[in-house]
Image 1 (cartoon, rainbow, N blue to C red):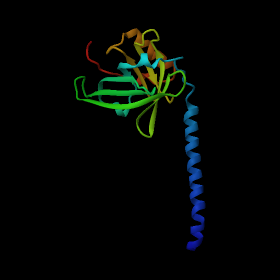
Image 2 (cartoon, one colour):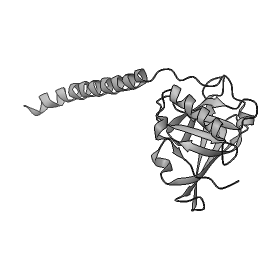
Image 3 (spheres, rainbow, N blue to C red):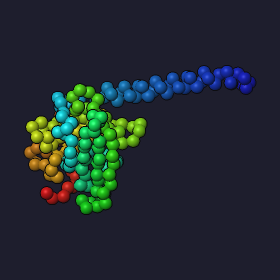
Image 4 (tube, rainbow, N blue to C red):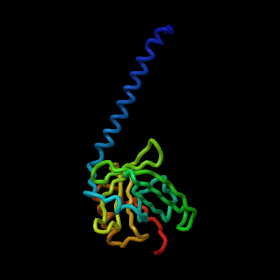
Length: 189
């Protein structure tokens, strides 16, 4: 093929390749979205009441928490309305070396129950509050609409068995693979 003919066809080939790749990505994204039914959240969250220290009671396995024990998350509402996040993991044991990760979260709707969390730009994750002790904000069930992340959180290092079982049941009803939950070792009170 002559060089000048190849040069004239190169933009067409690049455009066609880009179109095929874009269509594939869009089809994949649509199929993933379609595969997961609507995920209801709590009606409203007061972020100032939600702020403070939470202990992780259980989680679905995620690579960024591999080997983590005595996991906590601390939230602080900032003056701009966003939420500062500080997660702490003790690696390998309850008293193991602590590592922390900080992030920023913000509400994506007027209920404050659907948040985006960003540990580093440009990537964000979904943090949806699915169940919450509305009276005292003492426990919460948090997950993502793709059903790949789920956490049971408590203000105390341990959560009573009936409440824990009820939250697991809610997760099951919402389509999360609760049989894969890992229960996080926490220090005694």
